[in-house]
Image 1: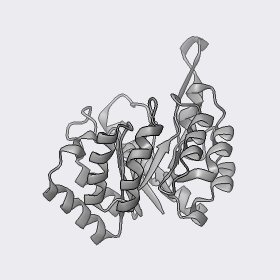
Image 2: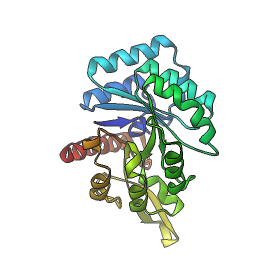
Image 3: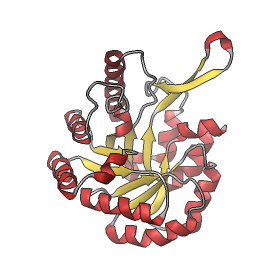
Image 4: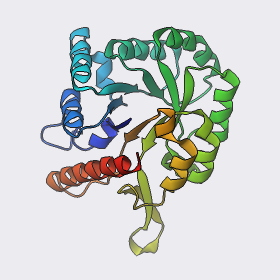
Length: 256
């Protein structure tokens, strides 16, 4: 399954544009692009949606044949329970979250409810938690409804090599965030900037990633995101964001 995250619409739903996209509008663009999945990720407004709005989103996704996924941050039991209720209402079978501190006890308490609801919890790789620690956490808990959301680009900020992150996490991956990145020299050659690149044009070894994770074979959703810098104005930024999205979907479909 190949799809889009709200992070593929980062600028289009941001306050920097004149008319930020709603979740419903992002879903419609996902449908129009022929994607299989739409992940509503780190979009806190969704916690305030009433049941009518959530049900309408779920119905539209079902009608279009698009699977919904959900994303948040944090592992407090009450927070996970809130997002599990939202995921269940949306018909989402995956909730991605991020660990920011001691999490094992909370995860162990919450996971039976995830299992009962048929929802998988995916812990994302990122710079605040060493990948080895995240893998060890998942292996200690050893629950069928717990896995890893792999995004090797995030871990570069912690000086982890993406290949090492891929190798460590691969057996436990249940969700894949697909974005490429590149380093460029800052002005005056005083340091580097790490930012996004069109998929396949950056520093991420995509051949290795797909060989190790085998997302199509294992039924793992491949969700497109971007680290696209602001291009100086709304029109140029939005146009480039859309081009990157179309390019990423085409790239992933060629690999399927």
